[in-house]
Amino acid sequence: MRILLVEDDESIVELVTAILNEQKYVVDVATDGEAGWELIEAFPYDLVLLDIGLPKLDGIALCRRLRSQKKQVLVMLLTAQDTTTDKLLGLDAGADDYVVKPFDVRELAARIRALLRRGSTSTTPVLTCGNLHLDPSACEVTYNGQLLRFSRKEYLLLELFLRHQHRVFSRSAIVDQIWSFSEDPPNEDTVKSHIKSIRRKLDAVGAGDLIETLYGQGYRINPAYLADFSDHKSDHKAVAQASEQAVQESTPRPQQALNHSVTAIWQRTKGVNLERVQRLDQAVQMLRLGSLSPDLQQQAIQNAHKLAGSLGTFGFEEGSQLAQQLENLLEAGIPQWLPTAQKRAVTRVEPLVLALKQLLEAEVISPESAVAEPVTPVVAASQIQPLLLIWERDQDLIEAITAQAPTYQLRTTVATTLAMAQHQCQQERPAVALIDFSLLRTATPDQSRQGLLAELQKPPAVPIVLLSTEDSSKARVEAVHVGGQLFLKKPIQPATILQAIGDLVSTPPVQRPKVLLVDDDPLVAQILSSCLEPQGIQLMSLQDPTQFWETLKQVHPDLLILDVNMPTI
Image (cartoon, rainbow, N blue to C red; front, side, top):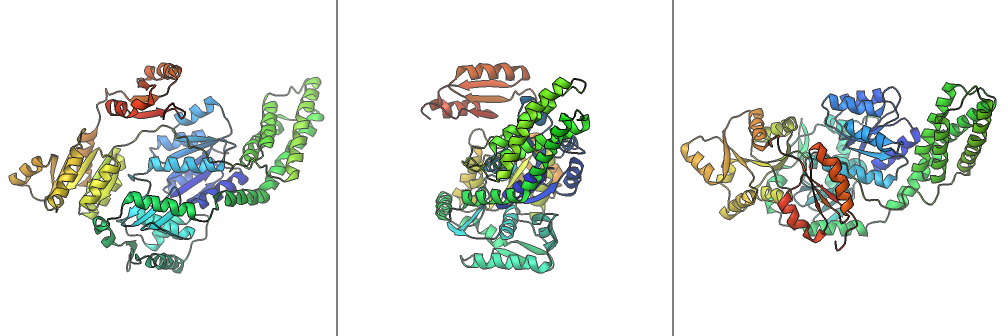
């Protein structure tokens, strides 16, 4: 997956880039808002990490521009302003989540994974092809439960193929997808070398032909593996448990490696922060002389602001607090015409700058580093688009529908076999199923077909749209008998199909969003009700968590709010 980081603090840039590279993301960097906008227009990103305080175009304005241009890329704001107003401004501008500086790097990584999972069109965070499983959250690949080791580029290549299992990738397309624009572009032999290495490792476990070469075109997942999906009888739960066990038994590197990485980056970038402290010291000297101009004061505020975010992220909690105090003092304003006020300001600012200088010159990362404990990710609310399940033999039609679906506010998931279609229904219930009628009519054994139809007809029933080359009365009657709600004759334009599906799944405008709150504190329900009801949002609360499943089935909420600490459960 490709992430754009728009941040002008080079120490934060290096740290975040290192963390994201460790998580197997492709990362591009822009140091001002206008440069960030140019990259967003040039490249398709899965996520934009956006600092609020940017030169040329600030983060809030850039986020508003994104949404006004109908760009649906996920946006996470990075802000050193931990105030409700700033958070509301960011979310109202169209951001999907935010992280306050200084941030815990493990929390940042976890929240990015959570946000990308929510924005993914996949029905499951684990990418699967036959017995091969790739878990993006753990950056682990297993085959029949056996953990496989890949380099970063090999992992990114394999992930690219598994996310687009019906697409052929040329070498140039592969380079565009998994090499950031700041890297030197590789030659063709480099791509071939990575493919060869992946095949060799897959061959060791009996899947060496999983990646197929189409001469003159590129590479893709071998269709035989997609067609044979139903022949793989491995238990997905057992595979997941085996993968988890393999991860636990692998070399225990995360915390030590992360600590080492943070320390190494600090050693490379500490000079930037020392220069900021020196500029603050110069501002103190100018203040002592009574000649601190408004421009110099504003520069000092910016230096203190950046120090507050950067130092805390590297584990200097005390330094971050000192910088925050400096920023607040400098922002309060210092009357140039009142010498006593300037003297008083010097006596308050100078000790803080001296303490900062002593702290940084010690060059020691505190043991309360930003990687001490894993943090539960917090996810902002977001509208979930209806899911369209596609079981169709025409690959060109599948790709066209998948490409155009976001325009109709639809997510898509593709099944290549009957068993896979039923499995995906169990993983995430679709809003509508688009099925090639000829595949359904010829499906064997018959009980398997009935199993899929029974799954789709469970209340609330999933509307079935059937595509057929045969437009006879017999075919239409048979379509009604299997539960078809729409019968569309091939050949047909993808836009016509999606328009019909959009009309089918659209919700009445009078329907109020429903929120279910599960919290044993009745005061929380009262506060939320007073906030949400005036906005047309219906709030239902539950204080007894043992009644959760029964209430969930009755209410069918659009959003759940769950208290972490509940009695019993």
